[in-house]
Image 1: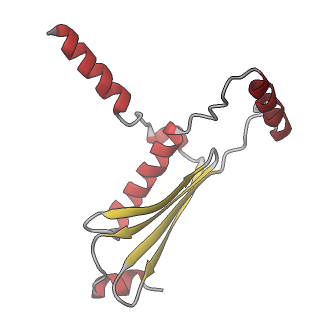
Image 2: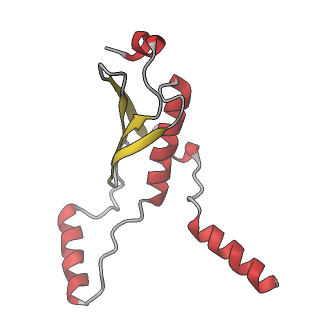
Amino acid sequence: MSLIVALSSLLSACSSQPEINPEEFAGQVSDSFRTDIKSNGLKLFTYRAILTMESPQSQALPHEVRSNQKKRSRSNKRYQGPDLSVWTAQIEHGLQQTIKMNGYCRDGYIELYRSIQADRGTIRGECNDGADEADLAKFDS
């Protein structure tokens, strides 16, 4: 019985989102939220986050990264790329907080596109609710 409990907790820990500390990226992220309300009331948005901190000198330069990738490919080890899970969670958190603060998608949204890179991320989506008069007054440009 205790083995089942231990395995369950291990599996849930592996499948859960990484714990993020919003303070970890404080002052290091610039984000934007662009709205697009169509004439039929469809509400779209684009959320962008850019890591604005200066990269430390200890980070590898692009030519060093390529050189290291070539060395790994010759040694038959697959290049896994950087772990972007914490940065991805931070971008998702930023989007959720932005939508919560501005009230753009009252009934949630459907994600249409996502691109996450080491220093930037973009999420595009469509709100589950249509635009009303208040939305048009507040968000239509």
